[in-house]
Image (cartoon, rainbow, N blue to C red; front, side, top):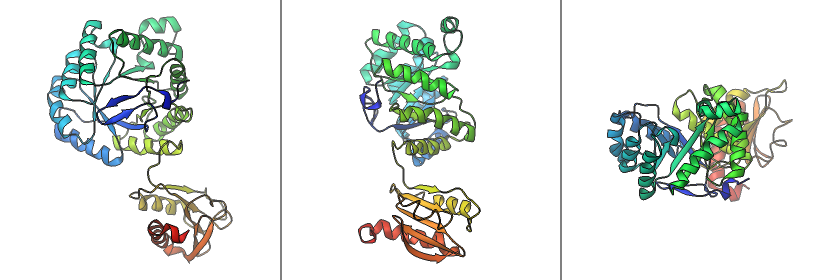
Length: 358
């Protein structure tokens, strides 16, 4: 199986995809692309949240017409998402998009596809070929009886063969389903057959809560197996929420870190502190810190400093007071109502004078 460090590299604008490059966080705008101002605002919001590559729908001529201005003013490299109209794809490439997302089967035949890949090759624009379990070709559904990993693999390999026949190899591949096990199995099969970089996602994953769970299971399994070069969390939620979840999944898989991680114990009968509120408040207070620390919020001294000794810093509750600890050693005892403020003060001292505190 070809793992992420063994995949081919392609360049999308300033970004490197594949070959062991950092896994890139992607999202998609939900504005009317033709509304230039609204789309630019959303792209800026996505960048501020941590998005690195953004896809925009190009369903009509109005969207095509704004692409040159959108590319020029966008805070992020753009992917143009295009179906059925090869002229839109040609215009998007000329407008300067960093990447194209097409389905070779619905772009209008091999002759029109040849025009697209010829210009993409000339302008060094990679193409993502996406296969969705919900829209497999009829012949494959007849052959396999239903969407299966084998059917998805055959579909994408057929598309790749067409692109390669035309001399185009700057490809990123995605195989998505709304089923996490089907998504995982299809990507695993593909990784045994090809070195093209993979874009991961569980499509139509659902609302914020259920979509987060399904995405974490599907994408997380593939990341832990060493697969995946870009990811997109498909949520029925504001796009910025997709970025929050993507960062959390990458951090949980220990692929990338984005600032502090707050770990906390479940509450129990020994707890004498408002642990849930305390953990939430600490997460909010450290959002702007870039240092990849592990911070612990523990409910009592029984499972406090000792159990969380692997954390850089932490707090543990007690009766009317709390403990602040560093690498498992208690450094301060403070009144419970001052615990979060005292901890934040100690945290900033730690960041500024780590050697002395250690």
